[in-house]
Image (cartoon, rainbow, N blue to C red; front, side, top):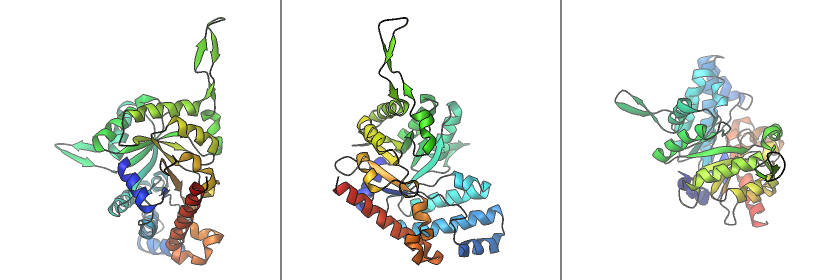
Length: 322
């Protein structure tokens, strides 16, 4: 699947993934009115509204981006109807030829991790038959329970030719409370029990482990074991690019969280590959921004397409002028 993602990035000339993170405040009133008139102001009505919203967005952008990243929490908040809208969105995007990265951030161990991996990337056995449940192409996972939480996902990825993006350095402001903590990575002789040396931030140690997992599971030039590194920390991204040379990096934090094209160049290799940049509300709710307000709510999908085109140009300019 990593090879398919790379091929689509090359064909679209857009190392961009659109985060399909629908909130009702993003959904134009005419769509909510239609959904609520049929199903009421219910969980079913909300789920229908976000499905209609997603479908129109996808129709407007599927030919100019390689991938989408639905965030499952935005669907789970509407219960079972929301999860049904999530599944309809995944299937619709795959039908349009898009690579689907499930932003699920799962992190557990043992049979629980196996079940998450089977449900999202693999298949489950029911009697004598096997069924795919959500069937996304990639999933985001949290590594902080160690290899016990990651290996079940890797096993399924091997079987299904799918991929992972493992959280390494996230874009949120408080990520440093844990991820930036300095860790002593060795000892030298002398004193009681030796003296610690080689203090390094925890995110670098996690990045090294991601690189090790990745070296064992290559798809070609790149591993199908990738990493999540926020756009809001470009210098840290530069260091992690060196640590994980064969891992594709999923970069959140562009646009609404402050990241710009010039902040992203260190995530890419010289050939312009190695990273895919996420924008969520900066694209799907572009019509609510002053820059794209002229499109209006009725043409929100056209505004999203314009935002993708501007983002693609911003990234290309930054890469060409680095």
